[in-house]
Amino acid sequence: MRRLVAQWRSEGLTVGLVPTMGGLHLGHKSLVKFASNKCDRVIVSIFINPTQFTEEEDFEIYPQTQDADCVLIKEAGGNAVFIPDISEMYPKGFSTKVSVSGLTNIMCGASRPGHFDGVTQVVTKLLNQASANNVYFGEKDWQQLAIIKRLVSDLDIPTNIVSVPTVRDEFGLALSSRNSYLNSSQLQTAQNLSSVLQKAAYNIAAGGCSSVECDLASKILLNSGIDKIDYIECRNSHSLKLIERTNEDECRIFAAVYIDNVRLIDNHIVV
Ligand code: AMP
Image: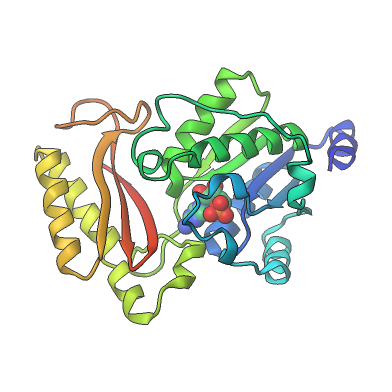
């Protein structure tokens, strides 16, 4: 990949990277399209990174659909696919950790200890390996995006981080590789999540108290068949600090919920 990118860059071409774990869907496709509209060449990486899964999570069964993924990447305008294996990424003796403090111990970081350290470790490697001009991440994983922006700024990594809006189904459900774990009635339940969050965001924007609106949203979701709420919180979009009432700063409502043992996340801007 280094040789290929060096060749492209020596020809004066701009290079975009889209990191993924595979199981690609239309959300990923939009990232690749977005990248190929802005860059001359686009690489998509597919790597199910073991270091970002906690012990009880779905690493062993994470969807693997490489042939279909390659078709989707080509259709979306991708030029190359990078599929390293685990021993290539973490050879014997590998001992370096990459950790961003502050932003990582709240929301998903609180309930998935070590998850974001795994993310920053693998993203640092991918950014160094690809030396792309731009790297594309989805807004669905907003906390991840905020952490990666911090990482790249703190470590002077010469790559632009570009965010891409969340792609949703007709009911507003954010597309996710993990949606494939849901049966049809669970899918219907999941499809309530976005509209309930949007309603809460609307009420907060209209002057409502965010903790009251978040509690109400939790109750509605639990009544609609969601099995467990991990968190529903209103936070500043950039610092990720908790917000009680809207002020001039941009804020968002963030949620992680469970249907059975499938964890779904989403976020909406409060405007
Ligand atoms: P993943 O394969 O889940 O690690 O996701 C790879 C990239 O795709 C991440 O930057 C995600 O934020 C992004 N992504 C996942 N789902 C969506 C979606 N529904 N809309 C936009 N981007 C997404």
